[in-house]
Image (cartoon, rainbow, N blue to C red; front, side):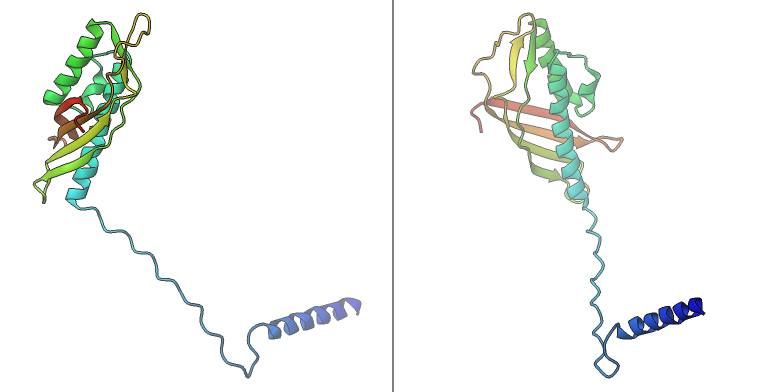
Length: 185
């Protein structure tokens, strides 16, 4: 009998609790909870936007590869061809070859600020021109043999113009660039 009383008591508590939830029976219906609209996916980037992103990535990648090879002046580094081709690759290799022949290495990294000057053609880009004011203040040459700084005061801000082109495999590589004198930007 005690077990049965407990069952009735528990059932009564459940009923009372169930009746006390919500609005009173003769009160207004509770207002529905507003549902937030589902977020829309951002629009797919245009061919122009993708070309700009990939060209800037190739430009930065070329300088990253050059900085890595410059720590030992490895003018034959296979990484140089990842983001550069043609005249650009030749110029990078020649610069590193000259440093190697002179017993020089580069320490530090340039600060890049690339911007896109033009995209050609706009509807299906295959060529992007990048303009940069690269700062080589902290990227200097040292003698490999004793670590002596040889380019004291040689760093600074320089105008860099680069051509980045879409390759036949769909990748983007810097095909040419020119670095101006310090103070050109």
